Image (cartoon, rainbow, N blue to C red; front, side, top):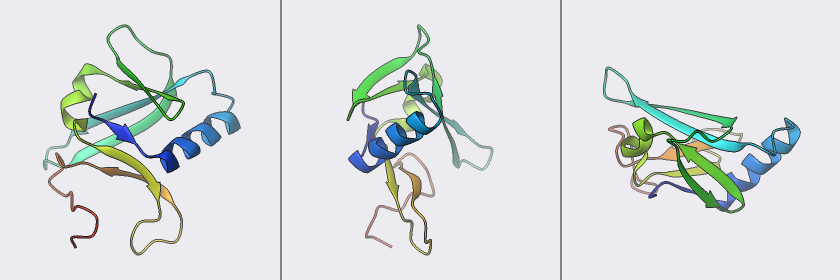
Length: 106
């Protein structure tokens, strides 16, 4: 699978799972294309389904349904402070998203 998470994202995912009592579940990552072409993302804890694409990165089990695989191909999930923000948040760096600007090029 070409979807990746950073170590910072993994730490936050593990911490969130522990805080919510969901450490026995995997992280489900979903994406869908909106009418305007932008990509909408969703994250949540879930149990694997038979059709899921499953990977393990930094001790996090990641689930992606077949309907989201192409939209997430080549993407990276990070946990960082976005430009003009003060608090860290999950950020999708996705070259498939028309709004994507590679870090350091704006």
